[in-house]
Length: 197
Image 1 (cartoon, rainbow, N blue to C red):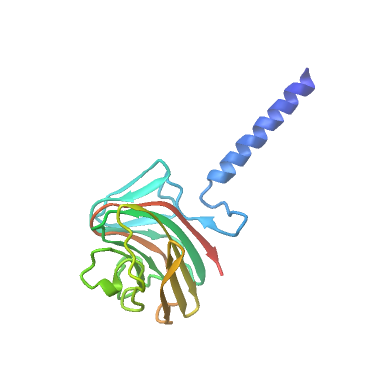
Image 2 (spheres, rainbow, N blue to C red):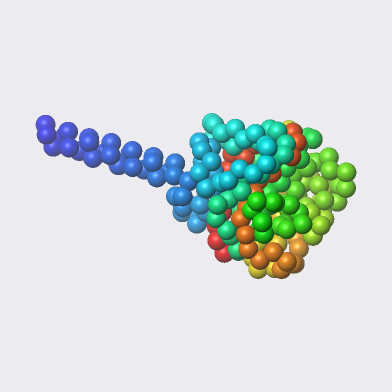
């Protein structure tokens, strides 16, 4: 009877340990990606600006302008995989290699845009603002989308839902934090993970 009890307790311990490891923000997956958001907290991020960030149900949501979540870590060469939902008029983006984590903008980082209704459509969703025009133009509003961002030295590439939308060769910003923008409309991230190259 005691041996059965020990085996059951050992099995429960193994299951709990596995579940805790799977839920950890810093736990690396088998393919080398590390989650940057856990949908439960803002661990690993600083808030700048006045945006309202809501966390829950595995999702980080920005729903008021204007501000950023800025990673506490700096990154150089990497691949980001993200899943996001935006309204058709949402103004958001993923900023990479930010040079000033207290003042994020397209002038001091690479802005991978999420903004379907941007007045200049050449830099709308899927573009790298001021560096690589989007082609084809991609509308993300009203549904979940996948985005992959590759930054390897001077080589930058963005893919939306499996289609390459922008590529650039630029070395202006070699390294820096990553920032998520909320600048109007609702933006939701349910996955954001990174793998060093």
